[in-house]
Image 1 (tube, rainbow, N blue to C red):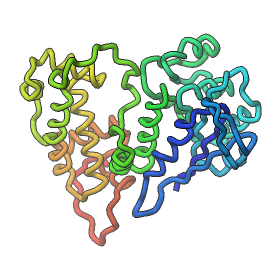
Image 2 (cartoon, rainbow, N blue to C red):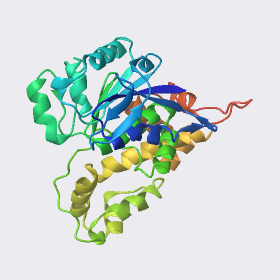
Image 3 (cartoon, rainbow, N blue to C red):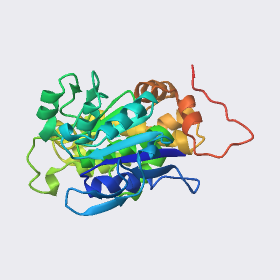
Image 4 (cartoon, rainbow, N blue to C red):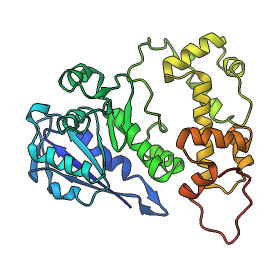
Length: 327
C-alpha cells in the first residue's frame, strides 16, 4: 500500500484538501485500499481555510516520515512560508520521497529550493510571478502538469485530478486508474502536455463539437480509423475535423487516436492474458512489434515487462507463450 501525506500549509482551499482522499481513496486492489491518505500540518489542530472557516488537522509534520508521497497544499504568500514546512519538504526530498504541489503550492516548493533547475508549472495567472521571483525554475507555462524526477507540479485544482490519476496509473496501471476516474466521475487520464487554456470560441451548439466522434472512435479502436473516416462520421471536412480536435483536446486527431490505442493496450495487458498480437489487434496497433514500439516509447517498458508489473490477473499454473521479441 502506498502512503500519502497531505501537508496543509494554511490557509488552504477546502476542495484542494479533500481531493487527494476523494481520488486516491477510490483505489481498490482485490477489495483492499491501494493508498492510505493522512493530512498533517505544522501546528496540529484548527487551521485556516481560504473561506475563513476552520478545519481540524490532527497530525503534525512527523506524519511525513513514513509517507511515500507528499502532497503540498497552501495558498499563502511564498514570502510568508512556515520555516518548519520548508524544512520538512527539504528533508522529504533528501529522503527521495515523491513530492507534488497542486497549483500555488509550486511557490512553496520553489521557496524550499526544490524547483531549482527543474521543470515546473503553476496556474497560468501566476506564472509571471513565479518566473520573476524564482528565475532558476524552468517554467512550463502551457501544460496541465509537469514531472521532473520525483517532483510534480500542476496548473490548478482540476489539473490536480489529472496528476493524481496519472500517479495511480504509474503505481497500479491504466485499468486501475481508469476505474478510479469512473468512480470519481472524472475524465480518463490526460497526459501532462495538454494545454492549460485553449483559446477558442465555444461551439454554438452540440453539432459543431467532435465529442460524439471521439466517443464513437473509442468503440472502434480495432478498426482502421483514418482521418477521412473520422471526418465522415463527424460530417465535416478533414480540415475542420483537425481544427476542432485541436481546439477541444489540444491534439491532432491521429495523436489523440494513438493515445487512446496505447491506453487500450495497457488495459488489455493488465486485465487479460491475450497474446501480444491479439492485444495489438484489439487496440488497433496492428502487430506485436508495433505494440512494443509504442509502449516502450510511452512508458519505457516492453509489453511483457508491463504485464508483469501491472497485471490484475491471479497467477496461473501454466504460462501462455509470449511472442513479444526482445522483452
